[in-house]
Length: 470
Image 1: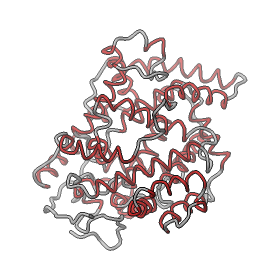
Image 2: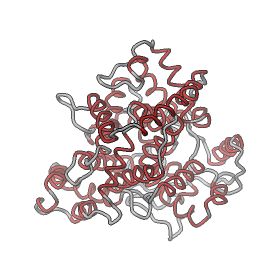
Image 3: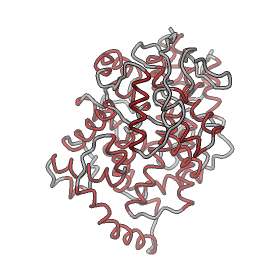
Image 4: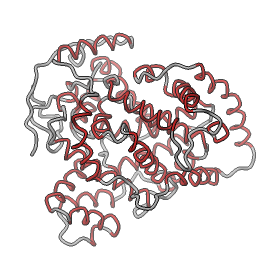
C-alpha cells in the first residue's frame, strides 16, 4: 500500500515503505486510538518515517563535498555559520535553526532543571543506568541500529560506548552547558552528526528492513530517547525510590530535555511541550512499540554483564561501600532486582531479566530515603552545590583520556555497520511473512490484556519491495 499523501516522508525514504501505523514495529494501533484519539495517532505514527530532516540534509550536502565537509560543520559549530566560506544552503539552514533560540526557552528554567535533575546524587546515577539506559533497550525499533553496529554487544567496545553516552548525558544537562558555545551544545550537535551518518549508511544498506522498522533514527525514536528514557524514566525512578519531585521541578527538567531534543533535531510540532505532553507521548510509544526481541535482549545482557564484571575508573553505579564488597554474580542479582523495582515486570520480562528477591530492597529502603529527603529539604541546603558535586564526581568517569574524542567518530561507527551487519542479522527475530509476524504479535498483545482489533495487529500485509536510495 502506498502512503497517504498527507503522511510526511523523510528524505531518502523509499516510496514503497508502508505508513507508520502499518510498519512491522507498530502494534496495538486501534487500542492506542481508543486511548489517544485517531487524529493524534495518525500524526504520531507518521513520525516513524521522518526524522531530523535539517541535520540529514546538511550531512548529505557536506558528504557530497568530500573530506572538507565535516570540517565545515565543525567550523560552524565552533565559530558560527558566518565564519564558513561558501557554506551549502543546507548547512546554513541547520545552524540557523539552532542559532535562533525558540521563544519558549528560558535559560533560568533550564538551569533549574539541571539542578533538579542532579541534586539527588548517586540515586540519579543509578536511575540513569537501570531505568534510562538499561530499560531503554525495551524499544524494538529504536534498538535496530545499536544491534547492527554491535558497539554495545562486543565486549571490547561496550565500555567505550557506555561512557560516550554517559558523557553526553552528563555534559548536556550540566548547568549552562547548552548555551550556544557550551560543551553540552557542542556534544549534542556532534551526536546529531553521528545520527545523520548512521541514517545515511543504513538507508542504503540491504540489511535495513524498511517495512518492519521505518526510518533510521526516526522522530519517534528520538522522543523515546530524549523524553521517555532520559527524562521521564529518571524522574519516575527517583519518585519510586522515595524522592519528592515537585510539579515545578518536573516542568523544569522537561524543559531542559525539550531544549536538548530541539538541538538534536526534534521538530517543534513533534517535540514534547511539557511534562503532561511528554507523559502522553511516552504512553503512545509504550502501547505502539513491538515487544523486545533477541537483539534487544543481547544489548541488555551485554550491558549488565559489563557493569557487573568490569571496572570503569570513577564510575560505580552502586554506592562504593556496596560495589566494592560484591562479587560479579552478586552485583548481577542486585542489578536485576533494582531493574525489576525501577523498570517494572513488563519491561524486565521482555528483556528476560531474571527475577530476584532483591527487587524488594528498594521498597524496603524507601522509607529511609523519604525521611532523608524530607530532612534535607527542611534543613538549610544548596541544591546547586549538590548537583555540581554529583556532576563533578561523575566527571571523573566521563573525562576524556589521551587519544579519546568526546563522542564516537561517525566514520568509525559506519565501518562498524559494514563489519558487523551479517552477525547482527542473526540476532534479529525475523518472520518469513507478515501473516506469521502479525499472528505472533497478536498473541503477545493478549498477554498484556490488550484487545487489538485494527490492521496494525490483526491484519496481514503483502510483502513490499522498496527502492533504496543510492
